[in-house]
Length: 330
Image 1 (spheres, rainbow, N blue to C red):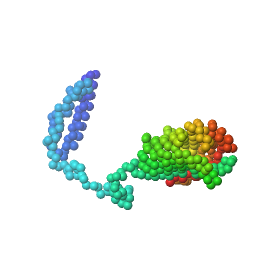
Image 2: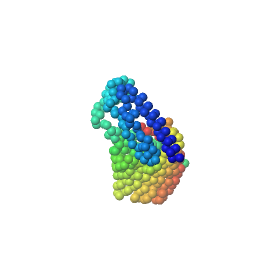
Image 3: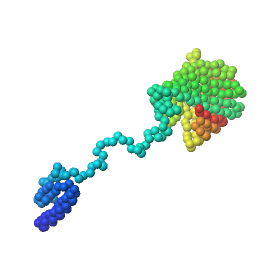
Image 4: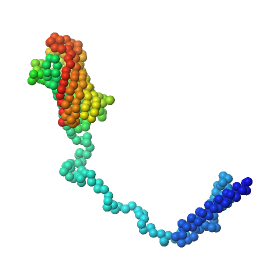
């Protein structure tokens, strides 16, 4: 059985060796020299083949002599053996998508491009009328506004904020702030400046303002500002809002605001502690990002000593307001 097995293996190897030698001889016909050792030096001996099948290592005694090959008949003219600096005729124009305009040429070229290369070096401006609305209550109607504008760059801006209401053609209560804003994190700005409160038939108040404004986690827009006024007066104003995109144009905006004071102010009917709060929501339709009319409902409430002042003046401690207005972005 062993002799028969070795005989069949020898026969298979012999046929494979003959096929390999024939293929090598055909591939080297154009070189003008016979394959060295193709007949006298087989690629693998019979004993080596048997050793390889039994787990041994096969050894190759023959090798190809490339020095004896004749390369004179080989055509290498069509082969590119090195890099070429010639630009193909059908190469894409690098300025094809800009209509030929570049940074230094064309009607939009900057005079000094070395000074304005990064976007955070440019100055921009924006003005937002966040709320310009008609307010309806049981006691009558009024107009309320809440605006803010800024000019500056990515890190430093100058803000002006104004909020108030107009009743019977007169400013009933208004707050105006002039602030310098500086970016302290990618989503938060610190603010420092002045606040001025004025109104019809009421004394004015001046404050030093300081606080933060930015975007809290989960996309809440937050403002927290502290105030220091004359005669030891202090105050804190907090506000937060969130935009729910029902569609790409319908936006629901819940909003809450609260004011706290550290000292009682009888001339203005303000008590110490939590003075007032307002919360509500507005649904707007954005014809564009710059123009969006809206409808909404809001609830306002007075607390503590402030509520006592309101009752003494014959007013309502809490009331529900229906609002209709427009939001404009410049």
